[in-house]
Length: 286
Image (tube, rainbow, N blue to C red; front, side):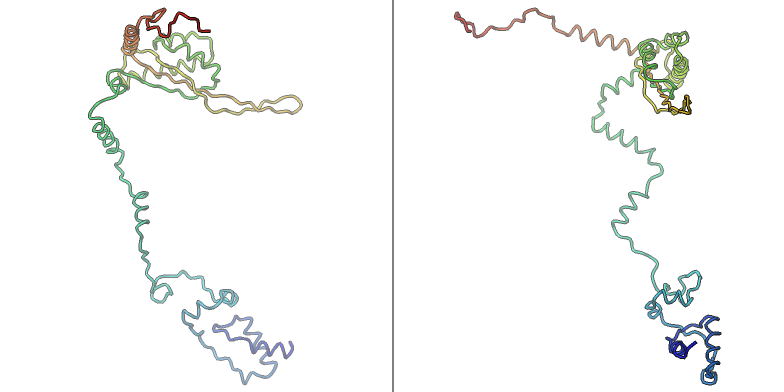
């Protein structure tokens, strides 16, 4: 090592902490080599404690290179730099409003929300019911939707048209003796719909009929078809559901009565309606 390098090393800026063991041993060897051991005696001393303002002004790169960082978890004690700070953050009005609308919720809201809406609706209508509500009070209705059958709309729609308008018992007999493959799935759904109507709505199976029946397209499944010469085709398998609406014979009688009343209220048809003639003269108008 040259004298210039040794001089630069000795004139380096002072560091407030104890240098690592490698640097200490190197500096000792240089001092002994130049014969300066008598002038520079190493006195073990504790590292000086710098105030917080000076620690914050120091560059983090210098601290990392010097190895002054200690992997110790901080705290809020008086000796910590965060000890004098307040840990409570004042909440603003907007924050409290957002918290009250998002996080604060009544756990029993489902029990009183619907009665409250129903009461408000009755007050607004002054106790009057719509025609739909009056029919629901007087007549029984049950809607049953099936799960997805592994068939297409093209194959299931004719079956839905076949059972529409028939009694539930007649529709079950039709499906029992049908040659279609999808009829077996529809038969199971009709059994389930009939049992649900009896248990839930107390409907009479002998008076129950299928007022409406429609199909719904579902998702498509994927399968592979292996072909010649290592080719593979992708098959899209359709899935379809069927929905039926069950009602009793009382509803059918009411609908027939309304149609007859509407026919009787209709005015008789006339070949030439009797209306006054205007603009008649004895001269031609062409």
